[in-house]
Length: 325
Image (cartoon, rainbow, N blue to C red; front, side):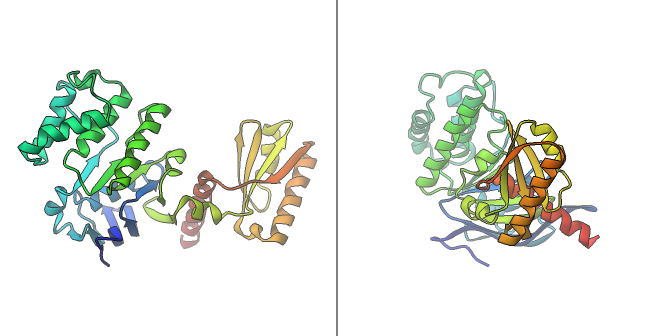
């Protein structure tokens, strides 16, 4: 296991963390390419934050090996801290300081040379659109402005690697879109980013994605690779009464989930039903169930999305746990 200058920023093998009887992270293998926006997708309690804290040296793993930017973690965590940035989901800067004063304080904390500090802060104020409010108290900023300021402070020392723990959970969609544009600008400039999220639309933006569930890594790949694994397994059902149609399909053999999306139903089928014969049998059972419920409906295949992937892999994870028990 190793990282190299050209290819890999983070490499972890068998990474685990226990808190007493609780297994928060369970034997994760992870490889994060350089200059990528790498996403951690999972619900609250899935182990995303715990994994990030271990990767950046804030938390000692119970088992496993970690190498980040060529350094062994946690043994060389102190050397790593000058080379990384970290941004949490809560605004953690000083609300009674101005925008510029927050940047000046973080520059001093991160050891930015004094001769470079003024120029660097001026750069960030321009890049993050604080030109007209650099003297404004941080506590009076909007949610989106606070997130941009937190990001600017996290990169004040120009880190090679940036960890972001659900950074946009409290901002509006337009602010989130602008924030993600900044992340891609950082990646284009050479920064590697690891971003945890529970939002599907954010996960779709990542170059590569890992899905965690109950501390277990259940999927890893590009969004296209992950959705490609469900080819032929997702259906759209258009019915006059989608609520009654949904009730009719729950429990049908080969149907894993049924979710109402507007006036239609999105149906995920079992893995064996991606095969032609299995798919035909499942479609017939679905049509029969709808007819029995008096529902005239149109059933058609549709491309999978990341929500389908998440449902599929977490369901598989749950079934694996039940078999092991």
